[in-house]
Length: 194
Image 1 (tube, helix red, strand yellow):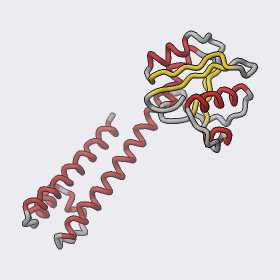
Image 2 (cartoon, rainbow, N blue to C red):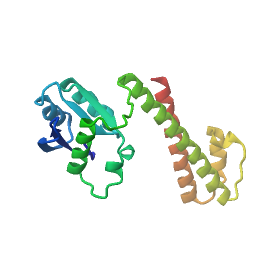
Image 3 (cartoon, helix red, strand yellow):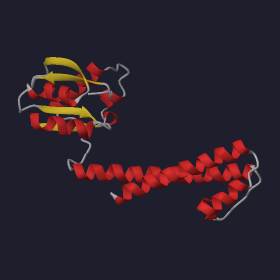
Image 4 (spheres, rainbow, N blue to C red):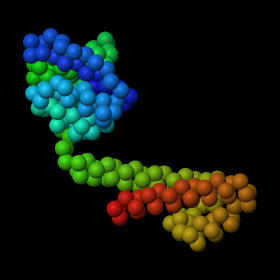
């Protein structure tokens, strides 16, 4: 499987011969359709990626086993200049048949995956806030306003700072940065409350 828009399915027999090869647009219905008619004794090998946990959860009821591996750990895929979805699908199936892969662990626990996403979101919001604060300070320094106190991020401090900027357009642009900072603080707080 590859790509965000589509996936390539190759069905390989135990002797290495190809039974079927098909391409589908990526959707839950197409995943179910692609794997429901293969029988429950099928083993699936797919590349690691952001969709891998979701795809596994969709197809798991229809197959015996889903293996996820990273293509970089498979030199046959990673170092081969001859690339393509069909070629990679064949190689993944053959590696699975020969049991020659390094499996990547994805927790089957949905709540754990959600928690991980929320932690990543919180981390990204915190990083974004720090960047916005640095940007605000830099814009103020260009105006000759060097404020070392965190007071400049409080409501009263902002007003005092913005009142010192005489050019309306610059005051508006810095005010917009403050608005973005408020939005990231709100988004981060909402994630913590849930």
